[in-house]
Amino acid sequence: MATAAEIEKQAEAREVRNRWFLSAPALIIILLAASGPLLIVLLYSFLTPGPYGDVVWKFSTEGWVSVFLERDIFDDTLSFAGAHLTIFWRSLKLAIMATVATLIFGFPTAYFIATRPERTRDIWLFLITIPFWTNLLIRTFAVLQVIRNEGIINTALINLGIIDQPIQMLYTDFAIMVGMVYVYLPLMVLPLYASMEKLDFRLVEAGYDLYATRWQVLKRIIFPMVRPGVIAGSILVFIPAIGAYVTPSVLGGGKNMMFANLIELQFGQGRNWPLGAALSITVMAIVMVALLVYVRNTSGSEARHG
Amino acid sequence: MAKRFSIRQQTGFTAIAAACFVLLYVPIAVLVAYAFNESTSVSEWGGFSLRWFAAAWNNDQVIDASLRSLKIASSAAVIATIAATMAALATTRTRAYRGLTFKYAFINQPLMVPEIVTGVALLIFFAQIKIATGYSGLGYLIAAHTAFCIPFAYLPIRARLENMDLTLERAAADLYATPWKAFRRVTLPLLWPGIIAGLMLAFVISLDDVVITEFVKSGGQDTLPTYMLGQIRRGITPEVNAISTVFLLLSVVIVTLFFFLSRKRD
Image (tube, rainbow over all chains, first blue to last red; front, top):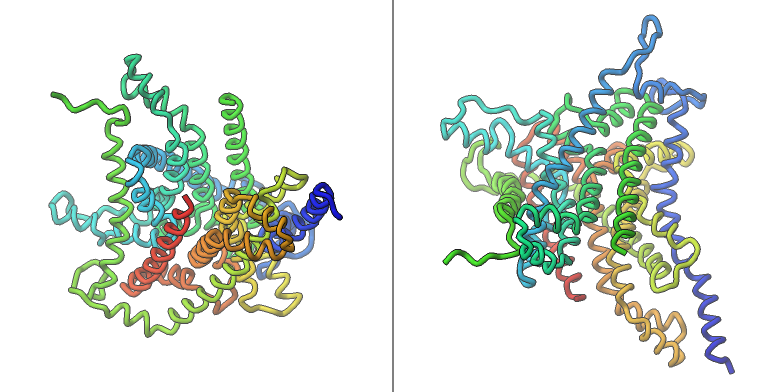
């Protein structure tokens, strides 16, 4: 007759076997169709471009050199690749601006939802969640229709007699930023809300008792408490923003490229796969740095509160 | 008497929040409104009409792309949900073990990498496989979609499992149920809402994808989003508005179902 201890022991042995067997399909699919191929990108960035795309299997650092530098076709001298630097700068600038703008709009919105009565809170949350799960391309397309020269903003301004020529908003950096703020706003609001939901308003009350102004309460009490949410939301917006492809290709037209469009170009007309691979690794590196900052910040704040 | 002082109030916050809610929905409302526009121009209102819905319905490319999207999304969602359910069973309700953190990180990895980078990686990798095997069907798209759907399917399933009562399974074991029977008769029925939620999330995520599909697809494998991207780049007709409206409706229905399904838990 098996004792309880033996049964427990058998169960444990079975668990050890099961946990690797059960997780195998998910791990293998991700390895083959997501993580593994990233290593191949690294490899490709050190090869020589083939004449019709793809690569020739010969080691070369040219792909990496041309991320920042360009070779003069006549005398082979190197100079800074101005076009690339402009695109890097635009990507970084727009991603940071979009992150800050979503924070400025998202913080009060999340706070508003978190301070609603329990019953209506879900409805407000639902209103933020719907755009979050609807197609990003469609939402970008919706922005395009509003800010076009013939869109409702320009039409309204002309009809009101404020302007007589439409303001060119589409195909500018401004359009890309507006589009990114629009599509990524829910990514900021949701984690902010999650951290505000548990906000202890007794501390806020104590602040007011001690003659703090509304601004002081916000800055010295609420903001420090929801900092993890602020950081999480910023990361969630910054990562897709720096690699954004749909928004700049729809709202930026052909001229106002960002990282992702430059990468796409190397695999299309540019026919320079190693350069495209090196650019991809560069974007990854930026994202990794952002994630590291995130991990260091959140683990630090836990230590302080714990 | 002055208005009662509320400690929760912050100056201007409600106004900004209200503006956000309005601004989130105005562009979508405009897009939907123009789908019903009689006029060919997307800027002038020519009266109510369903002609653009009819045009989209009669456009073989649109129907083709839609069917392809549905085929990919349903295959990817089902495979991803099965894999995610298995993985969730192996990573919850257990003491921390060697490799557990690694598994979390690995399963969530597709969320950390920008889509463009994954797209490029798969373009390169699948190009090699295409040369080696000669196969160029929808399998590549389904594989790619399955991989990035797994972390989304995993989330609600894991959440559901973590809130689940272990004693029920113990009780089943005490009553001589085999592990498989205990799983089928006790764990699975309790887990079901999480699995459905995961399946729907994965389906929506797959249906929405543009970037990875754009890089992985071979010629003639447009999905509805990549077809629409092509149309938008070429210049816009209200037909795209009509397609978007139907697409939006589908997403909203799925999200609403998902929302109520995951609410029930509390």
